[in-house]
Amino acid sequence: MSGATSPTVENTLEVRHLQTRFFTREGVLPAVEDVSLTLGRGRVLGLVGESGSGKSVTGFSIMGLVDAPGRVVAGEIVFKGKNLVGLPEAEMRRLRGSRIAMVFQDPMSTLNPVQRVDAQMIEAVRAHRHVSRRTARDEACEALAAMGIASPEERLRAYPHQLSGGMRQRIAIAIAMLHKPDLIIADEPTTALDVTIQAQILSEVQTLVRTQGTSLIWITHDLSVVAGLADDIAVMYAGRVVEQGSVDAVLDHPQHPYTAGLIDSLPSLNTRGKRLTQIAGMTPDLRSLPPGCAFAARCTRATAVCSTPPALEPSPAAQATQRGTHLVRCFHPGRQAGVRKEATA
Image (tube, rainbow, N blue to C red; front, top):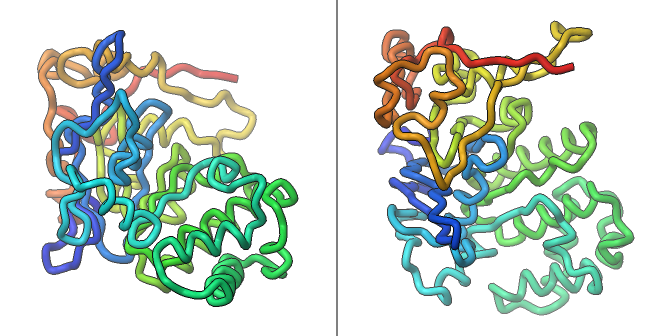
């Protein structure tokens, strides 16, 4: 489980008290604050939150891809026993693409528009292994077939602009899987795709991950995607993890009011023809976060104690039912914890 995998299980990744900040002229932005995650081999972690929650910056921090004016200022990122924080760039570059890979939201930002797919995939293979172009091309063809791409030879000869968005994203994922990495970080890779294509890609990714024993962090704002794909979930708000545990525990028994609000705002068959519920208010400005709980201004159960920072601790409900480790950052946890709501057409 994220944040609580048994020590007898080999962990692919352990993030410990990570802090990433951006130093701008307007002030310091604590984009990621005290984030701790644990990911076991072959496990899928859904990292959930709305825009500005810090989920993507967490992924970039793990990959060592945070650009100036941002930087990791504290914490550890332990991958297969090695702390990546402060690792020389040359050594980090050897890990990227071979043992750690990332899939981005827009495949056109990953794929070179003036190179054929085969040239790009061959280059990706040979960047980390000394093999012939023929061997690299054969591996590329196999990777496309594994992603459910029909006529992979034909797709290899195509340029990115000749392919659909769904096909480009499949190819981007296939490139990430070329070296059978230990860890893949996927940053909302299916957000721009229609629901049918999204479901197909999720199924293919899940099959590949289970088959190869790859650990996966799936960054998204879509709880329905996490429900069908992930083993564990971590919900982020204003740079912090506010709730984490198994998917079943968090989605069936949300303990943080923000998580409960996200679930209540999802459309369903029961909400057809009705106004959708949304959480009132706006996410706070990271440059001027309130003292204590960042969600307090949007929560109906906030009290004076919420002016002090809550710790991420086992929820009372999880302790009572012995459902495993279910962590929540809230002084008033429970499904009854309320949020200020607005109705929208």
